[in-house]
Length: 110
Image (tube, rainbow, N blue to C red):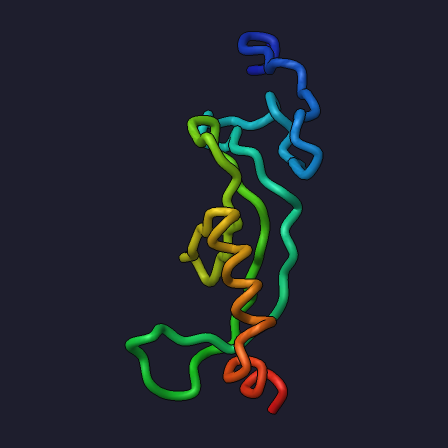
């Protein structure tokens, strides 16, 4: 007799959030039931704000996250085991600053 005969897993279900790729019901731990988008990964050189030097080349992933007890969606930027979650309004403000601030625009164009 297999473990799935003794402890059958619930049916997997598609989520009501169009961006969510979690196969709800097929995860092992309740914390894994969070709503997550597929995420977009890219390579970048990063360093902490208190660090000096060249930084390190890592994979960065950006996506949408909503945990079961959250009332809102979050934009998540994950880097090498750490990360940052921005509210949707915070992410919109970051996008505005990156596209509209002349000093940042010049730095990004150089």
